[in-house]
Image (cartoon, rainbow, N blue to C red; front, side, top):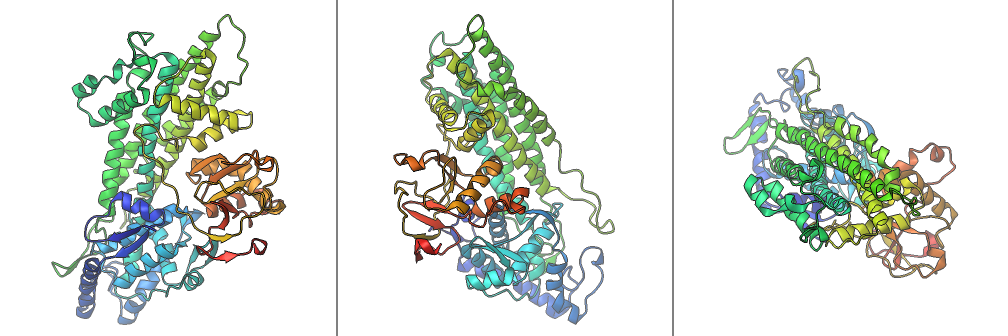
Length: 630
């Protein structure tokens, strides 16, 4: 297993993502010394009975009220308990892990005044995969106080946590993981909750998704260029050099790579001297998206490595300084701007669909109707319905927070909302781009024209595969393509990371082939029952497939999808394999009225098949048990 060591050097976004994906985290000795020096500032202030916000005074509007000695001893736990409040679904595990890692790295910067045991328990929770249950809505972006209080409660043995697929009282989760609860001292409670770790951690995941979507938007545009015979002069390197915008240059370079070998690049390949703007300005608009992705990523990296505590423990000055570093304003505005760029990319996609619609019916003029289904055309009006949603999501999310706490807290950034909205906007844009691919596929299938571009031929094959694998309904075809796209790797794009394999193992039952991908997957029934899994398991999984597959894909819980690699056994045909966050899949399934009414069981929806074995993701790696015992 990979290890990320937190040092005095800045943590990279890639390192954060590695921790999210399961890498162990360790603290080097210099960081431990830095944290201890920060805590020493707090200890000296307590000894001197200095007036310090949140340490020897109340917080919020009670900032000028001194605490008694007895109150000081109880204040840190009181802060943790009194600030925990939120509603909504629990945050996905990826976001929780990201938040834990962000807060740990923030404490390692040395400005929090927390003790070394605070950092150690956050690292232990990450390594043991003890994940606090954190409601998704409670923060206004001036410190994710309510959400981080849910994290802090688990650290002290309270609250709720998911451990090995089971939601437990926080103390029990720690006990099973062999972790001793934290005893708060100094300003440990305030240090744990007064942070934007949820916003920053989620932002790192979202901006990574946005970078991938920018690449795959190029692929969709390129396939539409193939379908309409577009003029690729707009991609000439001289155009980008003349404008001087790096994102535009990168977009044009990628598009040329995707189209390398296409007939469009040959002399006379274009049908027109100049195309509509939805084709002509793709490098400019997709380049703008890249520019704002880069700006948002820079803001994420800055906040990830910031000492953003209030009060700030400054060892060099020997002081605790009240400040506003908990206000991630640049990050929040950056994600507002990023959604506008996403909306422009969506506008171009929808306008190209209008051109594809015209191209299809021009091909049909005077001829018989197509024999094959035209799923892209069937979804054209769906795309028109999605575009307003994307445009409305582009509205600012950072301007609407009202004054709070007797007008002492009279401004907020809205950071968690703007990051969440950006995640939603990406899902809508990816839905649009998938429809564009299906429409381009319809046009190309009708024309029976060869597609020879390096990347366009690959993505067209992926679309054709999705159409053939899905049930013959437009929504099923779209879901099948969305499970493959934008996970499809385009030329120049990065391969999506796979989750590390985990789980207790059992002997492979008869009928289950050995030739599975080396990753943890979940059986979902399509047609006949999975062999040897039992009716209850297959029913629950089939329900999860039918009711929640689209939502799982939209939220990025499904990482990969495809037919079983070994289709030789007739009992396995029609099966599909998905890499999923099992706990999140079960939680979504449990929201369904049919599940609550008892018509489906989801407690067995943890069945997974790994490389030649059945696995339970919540079990310790390597534990051998009999299949019958499961």
